Amino acid sequence: MPMSMVHLSDDDLALHYYGEMTASEEHRAAGHLVECHECQQNYGRLTRVLAFVDSAPIGEAPDGFERVAWARLEPALPPRRGGWLSWFVLSPARLAWAALVVVLVIGAFMAGRLTPATTPSAGAPAPASAERVRERILLVDLGDHLDRSQMVLVELVSSENTGSVDISSEQARAQQLLASNRLYRQTAATNGDATVAAVLDELERVLVDVAASPSTVSQEDLDTVRRRIESKGLLFRVRVVSSEVRERQKAAIQERTGQRTLDTTKS
Amino acid sequence: MPHTDAAAVALARDGDSEAFRSLVERHSCAVYRLAHRMTGNPHDAEDVVQETFLRAYRQLGRFESRANFGTWLHRIAVNCSIDLIRSRRHQESGADAADLEYFEAAAEDRVDPSPERLMLSTEVQERVGAAMASLSDMERAAFVLRHFEGQSIEEISRALGLKANAAKHSVFRAVRKMRLALEPFVES
Image (tube, rainbow over the protein chains, first blue to last red):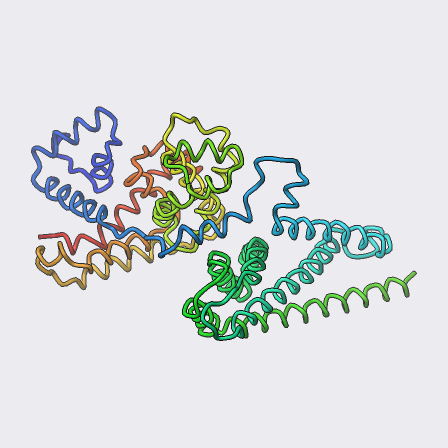
């Protein structure tokens, strides 16, 4: 069989379609396509399929996405001007995050002070201990975050039915909670904690809605937010997760207390 | 609100957050569409939008004022999408063979409708969307970069951190899956 009569494979046709062949390959493929009816048909099918792919529905952003995107983004934006002091003054969300970092550092320091020094052979390895300290501190902070979120949800659900409602207080707190909620959600997802991640995801959507709303909303708009909270059982789910987090906190404290007692007994 | 992107960028560089807000409001939906196509799901697309604008904000000083802001942002969004895909690369399942088998079985079960009906059919649209969704993360990224973004295999391999041959085969596999899923609908 002459070279030009060796049929083009599907992959060859894809390379030809995208212009990815070398000059010599391209020359051979083009020549073969002129002569070979079978490959012409196969190439025709490929081009029709790819033309259909071009008509693929593009995932459109949901209505009002621009506002939501900004509401999520704003608390996370780094400062462009002014000293570092203004960075803290102007951004409550960052202030909260900085506080968490301070708590972590102090917590790690205190853990180091309170935990008697051990030789590597005498007890658990140091990294595991540091990991437990970090986990305890994060549990405390996540618990506080869920409690504060619950308060916002409760206030939204239970606000009085009047013509228009001032939600500026809830809105400000929702803005503050957004940045940390996002971090907790990502951490939970990374750690494979799907239940917590799902609750935080739903919570984030409500927080975004509230943060992006005007400070005074109509009764109808507020009812929409309420329905969203209630239809997903969000308040209940946040309470459940909060309660679980508190239990894990207690267990961690008991474990630590037990460990300290054990260490004291040993010494 | 500044009327042009260039004016908004100049103000945003000086710390005007309202100017940056106007850029976010103008471009976030376009970034979302690209990110959705690259990552294949709305949740990741939202994360990519956030990361894209954060990076853009940090890099505003490096933006050439004569350049097109949308094009610059588009490149950042592609990189953010790739970073997200690469970060979860290890999670890719070995379901590729199963996907191909699924489409082969579906192709055998097909009913051949008329082309006129198909051209207008939302079923085809859904089918294309489903075929795209069936691609693995790497296949989708490679295919989107090749097919929609017009990048060469070499550029794709660099962007995705793959060897050229692996990038080429990701595109091949994606094209094969698209053909298996869609050929029954486009054959006349």
